[in-house]
Each structure stands twice: as C-alpha cells, then as structure tokens.
Amino acid sequence: MPFESSSPSSSHQTTYPITFLVVGGGIAGLACALALRRVGHRVTVLERMERSAARGGNGVRVPPNLSKILFHWGLRDVLMSKASITTKLVFMRYESGELLGEHVWDAELLEETQGLFLMLSHSELYDVLYDTATKLGAEVHFNAEVVKVDVPGHSVVLSSGERLSGDVLIGADSEHGQCRTAVLGRRDLGTPTGLAVYDTLIPMAFVSEFDTKVSEESWQFAAFGRGKGVVAYRIRRSEEIALQLYAADVADGGCYEDGPSIDLPCITRDHEISEKLGRAVHGARRATRIPVRQYADLEDWVSDDGRLVLIGEAAHPFPPSTIQGTAMAVEDGAVLAKLFSHLSSEDQIDSFLYAFQEIRQSRVRDVREAELAGIFTITADGPEAAARDASMRAKAAKRINVLEGEGSTESAWEEYGVVFGYNCEDEADEWWVQWGRLRQRALEVHESEPSL
Ligand SMILES: Cc1cc2nc3c(=O)[nH]c(=O)nc-3n(C[C@H](O)[C@H](O)[C@H](O)COP(=O)(O)OP(=O)(O)OC[C@H]3O[C@@H](n4cnc5c(N)ncnc54)[C@H](O)[C@@H]3O)c2cc1C
Image 1 (cartoon, helix red, strand yellow):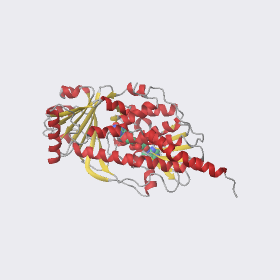
Image 2 (tube, rainbow, N blue to C red):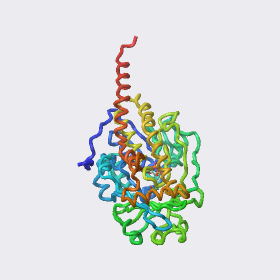
Image 3 (spheres, protein in one colour):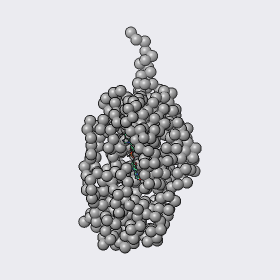
Image 4 (tube, helix red, strand yellow):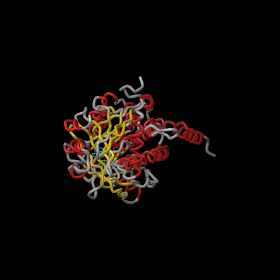
C-alpha cells in the first residue's frame, strides 16, 4: 500500500506544552493549528472575517508534497471523497486551439512521492483543516481582528480592545498583514509584474465545448497565448472547472477577499481566443482579479524583538493560484509542529524558531522562483514562446511526454519530481537528529555539572 491510511500516524508529543497565538485563520493558520494540536500544544487562532467569508469558492491544487502531509495527518479518506485526481497535463494554443501535446504523470515517480495530485475548491480544503483542527482542540475565533501586535509583550490587541497573550505568536495574516510589517519594520507592497490572475469557475455544461481529448477527468489543462495563459482543472466532483487566466492587469489593488469583480470575456476578447475556449469562457462566472506581484525574500521570518514567527503568505507571498502556494503554507505548519514536538523546556523555543526559518527559507525560495518562472512561460510571446511550442510539437509527434527531457537535458517532470518528492516533516526530523538533540544533550550536561 503506497499511501498512508486514513488513521493519523502517531506523532511525537511535547513534554512541555506551550500556548501559540496564531494571527490569521487562512489555510496557513489552520494547518499550523492542526499540526501543533497533534503534538500537544495549546493553540488559539484569531481570524478577522466570518468563517463563510474566510473560505474561497475557486480552485486549489494540492500537489503530492502537500497531499502526503494531509494523508499523514489522517485526512486521506475525507480528501478523496471530495477531490479530483490529476494524472495528465494537456497543452494547447490559446488563439487557435491547436493541441501542442500532453504529459502523463509517470506512475512510478508519482508513487515515490507518497502523495497524489489532487484538485479541490479552497472552501473544501479550508473546511477539512478547520474541522480537524477544532476537533483536535484548537480554538478558532472568527470576527477577531488583530489591530495591534505587541511582540516584546507576546500579545495582541483585538478591535474589541481585548488583549490576548501566548508564549509564541504566529503571523499567518498574509502579505498585507500586521505581522509581516512587524518583522520587516515597514509595509511591503512588492513590485507589480504587469500581470494579474483572473480566477473563476465554469459550470461543466459549458466545458463540453472543449475538445473531448482535454475534457477527460484526469486532466489539467494549459493554454498558451501571447501575453496570456490559461490553467484549468476539474473540481467539486467534476461539476465545475476551476479556470485561472493570467493576463495583463487592468486595475490597482485587488485580492481574494474582494471577490468576483470582472467578466472574463472583457479580458479574453473574442477575436483573440479560440472558438471552443471562447465559448467555455462565456459560460464562466465573474472572475476575481488578483495582481501578480514580486516580493524580495525576507531575511528574517522571526522577529528580533521577541517570539513572533511568520508562516504562509506572510513569510513568502506567492503569485496567486500557483500549484505550490497553498502547499508551502501547509508545509510551514507541518515543519513548525514537528520541531516543537521535541519541546521539553522553555530555553529551546528560540532555537526551534530559528531552525524553522533555516529549514524553510531555501525550500520556499526555490519553489517560489519556479512558480513565477512558470507564469512567465505560459504567458510568453515571441521567440521564447515559439521555441517552447516547437519543442512540444516535436515531442508530441514522437509520441513522447512533452515535459520529458531529451538527450542530457533534465526533464521538467524530473524537476517536478524533486519538488513533489520533498518530505518536509522528514527535514524537520533530520534537523532534530543532527542538531537539536545534540544541543539539548550539551545543555543537560552543562546543567548537571556542579557549579564552582
Ligand atoms: C477569502 C480568501 C479566499 C481565497 N480563495 C482562494 C482560491 O479560491 N484559490 C486559491 O488558490 N487561493 C485562494 N486564496 C489564497 C490562499 O488561501 C493563499 O494563497 C495560500 O494558500 C495560503 O494563504 P495564507 O493562509 O498564508 O494567507 P491567506 O489565505 O491570505 O489567509 C490570511 C488570513 O489572515 C486573516 N487576517 C489578515 N489580517 C488579519 C488581522 N489583522 N487579524 C486577524 N486575521 C487577519 C485574513 O482574513 C485571512 O483569512 C484565498 C484567500 C482568502 C483570504
């Protein structure tokens, strides 16, 4: 049996439970709360919105490196009852509908990742994390807006005036939140790329207009245009297609919380899009527009002033609707909890926070760069786009997978394999075995030595 069963695997439990106060009850905050409860810590999550507003209706991709964590946490059955599984990518031209080729996931490689590539709605994933975290004893407060973060005081103030404190503050309030500003010392709006994602859903009835070849259940679909790119996949047991269009931005600001604001055909323009794709786009619900911005890597994810650590978008804003944005948010919580499962005394807390930063920074940097590059690839124009398409056509003509490498070149799928195969919880365990345990022994020896 290659995959974890639905019973959660037993996890190492802390012998020194502490209280974590999590600012932000999005995917990162809830996943972190769930993971910390699994190892025996007390957790309170503060979310400024109502529960119904904090969950999004559009699609989320759950790649194998994420699904393996959720399976490990005992969530396999509940996820499989909601998710579509993808095993194939199909590529086409946006303007003509020409099929460029396809890539079928290599079953052996996929099995080695110990996960599956699942597709869900944001609200489905949100509910699974919320239900599990609260069942395990996490307290989640909605309509609880944090208006002040007092890092040295290990506390926050809510808009109601109430002050709450914890042993460690976790900033999971996204790139726009107060916690990132507190760690960085200033607001960081990032740099516009000129692109936005237009994120929407299409009822399945309109998708019969796609080529039958690309409307098979297990596909993820990408269409390359000049300065525009589409990604689409099935969600809600194939009742709907989640579709994300990357194209030139048309306004300022914008985030998921703003909700749908734009009709997709205003962006796709009928004379620029293939007839079949255009008909599907006309069936789309109004799209939510989120700008694609680039952010410099933060040097510190842990505040100099005290115990505030950033996770998820607050630590590393991803371009919207990527494969790995959600996965990195959940990996953060999984790693933090693994480290804090070894907490046996107060004096370990700071070193665990810095270990978290050390483990996560390089992983997230590499993955984020690749995701941004992916967006530029699907929206490319000119010689770069022509070379990409010619390579795919040539491989498709030879009936080989279009992401396969040729000769000595590494295949894009092999690169995916490395990212998907990563086991973040193993990385945290390895840090403990190599560094944490030794440091703890040294401290114990030091304390047991008679003082002169
Ligand atoms: C309402 C909503 C809908 C979304 N829908 C989708 C989707 O359909 N598809 C997709 O791919 N991605 C969606 N996302 C984005 C996705 O959740 C993130 O990109 C990523 O997966 C992980 O995010 P995060 O938890 O770090 O940040 P976010 O998801 O942005 O969550 C941050 C949370 O912190 C809360 N918060 C901020 N400031 C405060 C404060 N002062 N006090 C208390 N709470 C605060 C916010 O209300 C929010 O719930 C959505 C995000 C939101 C907020």
